[in-house]
Image (cartoon, rainbow, N blue to C red; front, side, top):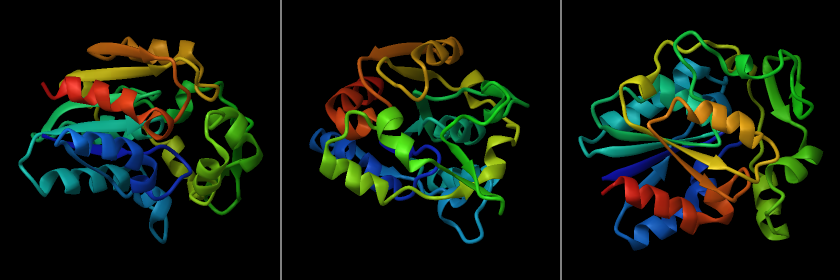
Length: 225
């Protein structure tokens, strides 16, 4: 069994975000890695289809069963890409489970959230002054400094692209509700979690794989048994 992690919006270097949990999993003999998303790191930026293709390419590289973990926007990506023979289970962390034809933007109010900044060139990013109070209130100073260096502009098209697949309809799924998340309200998470096979709720903020890796690792280890 292996774990593949798909990060959320407006960040790069998924391996850095995932490393604290990867180290815990490695101590239990469970290998893991993070997928590089073209919408955040390619030049020019890719779109949702490219992100899903990147996930499928990693899955295609091995017949080993995989837990496919999507964080926030990453849940849209794994819903699009997760109907793959290697995927043992989908794990959504404070995320979105779109049905076929739904887009990430459709889960909001119709207006961009206050932390969303459009650049006019087809990309968008997050307002850095709102990152720590909303997305990273539990980061210490050193961790936040390292995280801030990994914020990036992303192809804005991904937020409006409808999915063509809903892998959670065919693949077992677990939703991890992050009960102290100030960016994605817990009540919105719980509504999304109704689509999942089972639900785990943790008293954690938006990035528990960074700040509470032992809790995330425990959930994943349970799902490999």
